[in-house]
Image (cartoon, rainbow, N blue to C red):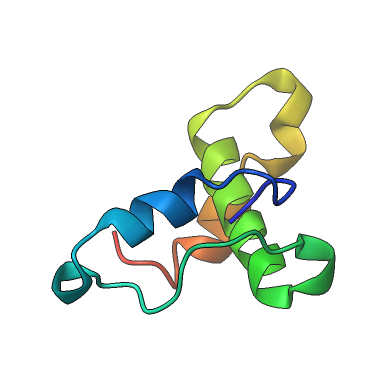
Length: 76
């Protein structure tokens, strides 16, 4: 989860679900990407996919990241 840790909406929404229908074990919470390699990887994948879809001249350096690195490992 991205953000500054102050938003409680995910926590409250998850806790409002009936216990027997929850599919996530823990409450969603903020993780500072500076301290989490998993969050850094997720951010990079999301950024590469976004650059593939939203191509503008200012981000041309990343246009091929999805094709070059992710399309080979992610399902179509």
